[in-house]
Image (tube, rainbow, N blue to C red; front, side, top):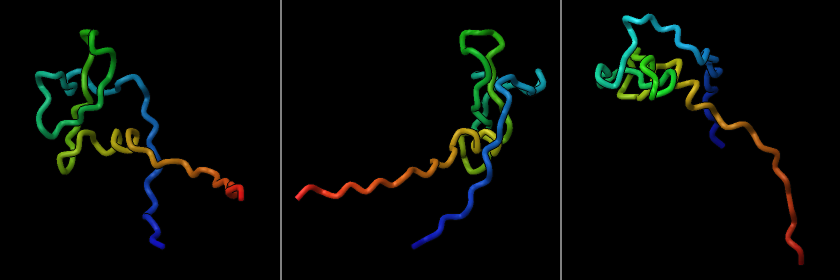
Length: 84
Protein backbone atom coordinates (compact mmCIF):
# COMPACT_ATOMS: atom_id res chain seq x y z
CA UNK A 1 0.00 0.00 0.00
CA UNK A 2 1.37 3.38 -0.99
CA UNK A 3 1.01 6.26 1.46
CA UNK A 4 0.38 9.61 -0.15
CA UNK A 5 2.30 12.62 1.17
CA UNK A 6 0.44 14.88 3.55
CA UNK A 7 -0.95 17.91 1.74
CA UNK A 8 -0.69 21.38 3.28
CA UNK A 9 -3.73 22.71 5.07
CA UNK A 10 -6.08 24.77 2.87
CA UNK A 11 -5.65 28.50 3.13
CA UNK A 12 -8.68 30.58 4.04
CA UNK A 13 -8.79 33.66 1.87
CA UNK A 14 -11.15 36.55 2.38
CA UNK A 15 -13.66 36.87 -0.48
CA UNK A 16 -12.74 40.58 -0.55
CA UNK A 17 -9.61 41.36 -2.51
CA UNK A 18 -6.71 42.83 -0.56
CA UNK A 19 -4.64 43.29 -3.71
CA UNK A 20 -3.47 46.88 -4.20
CA UNK A 21 -5.20 48.67 -7.08
CA UNK A 22 -1.95 49.02 -9.05
CA UNK A 23 -1.27 45.25 -8.94
CA UNK A 24 -4.75 44.04 -9.98
CA UNK A 25 -5.02 42.33 -13.36
CA UNK A 26 -7.88 42.51 -15.85
CA UNK A 27 -8.59 40.20 -18.79
CA UNK A 28 -6.62 42.60 -20.98
CA UNK A 29 -3.57 42.77 -18.67
CA UNK A 30 -3.24 39.09 -17.65
CA UNK A 31 0.01 37.46 -18.76
CA UNK A 32 0.71 33.74 -19.31
CA UNK A 33 2.02 33.08 -15.77
CA UNK A 34 -0.42 35.28 -13.82
CA UNK A 35 -2.86 33.85 -11.27
CA UNK A 36 -6.37 33.71 -12.72
CA UNK A 37 -8.23 33.68 -9.38
CA UNK A 38 -11.21 36.03 -9.92
CA UNK A 39 -12.46 38.68 -7.52
CA UNK A 40 -15.92 40.21 -7.82
CA UNK A 41 -18.66 40.06 -10.41
CA UNK A 42 -17.43 39.89 -14.03
CA UNK A 43 -20.10 42.44 -14.97
CA UNK A 44 -18.72 44.94 -12.43
CA UNK A 45 -16.07 47.51 -13.43
CA UNK A 46 -14.10 46.53 -10.27
CA UNK A 47 -13.76 42.86 -11.39
CA UNK A 48 -10.14 41.70 -11.44
CA UNK A 49 -7.81 38.72 -11.05
CA UNK A 50 -5.16 37.99 -8.41
CA UNK A 51 -2.32 38.38 -10.91
CA UNK A 52 0.44 36.93 -8.66
CA UNK A 53 3.13 34.96 -10.50
CA UNK A 54 2.39 31.22 -10.85
CA UNK A 55 4.72 28.21 -11.11
CA UNK A 56 4.96 25.61 -13.85
CA UNK A 57 2.09 26.95 -15.94
CA UNK A 58 -0.48 26.48 -13.18
CA UNK A 59 -3.65 28.61 -13.36
CA UNK A 60 -3.38 29.88 -9.76
CA UNK A 61 -0.73 31.10 -7.33
CA UNK A 62 0.17 28.80 -4.40
CA UNK A 63 -2.43 30.29 -2.03
CA UNK A 64 -5.30 30.05 -4.50
CA UNK A 65 -4.17 26.61 -5.71
CA UNK A 66 -4.56 25.26 -2.16
CA UNK A 67 -7.98 26.86 -1.89
CA UNK A 68 -9.17 25.53 -5.26
CA UNK A 69 -7.95 21.95 -4.97
CA UNK A 70 -8.73 20.70 -1.48
CA UNK A 71 -8.26 17.00 -0.73
CA UNK A 72 -11.37 14.87 -0.51
CA UNK A 73 -12.63 14.13 3.00
CA UNK A 74 -12.60 10.46 4.03
CA UNK A 75 -15.92 8.68 3.75
CA UNK A 76 -17.26 5.96 5.99
CA UNK A 77 -17.05 2.54 4.39
CA UNK A 78 -20.30 0.61 4.61
CA UNK A 79 -20.27 -3.13 3.99
CA UNK A 80 -23.44 -4.47 2.42
CA UNK A 81 -23.29 -8.22 1.85
CA UNK A 82 -25.01 -9.52 -1.26
CA UNK A 83 -28.25 -11.42 -0.71
CA UNK A 84 -27.86 -15.13 -1.45
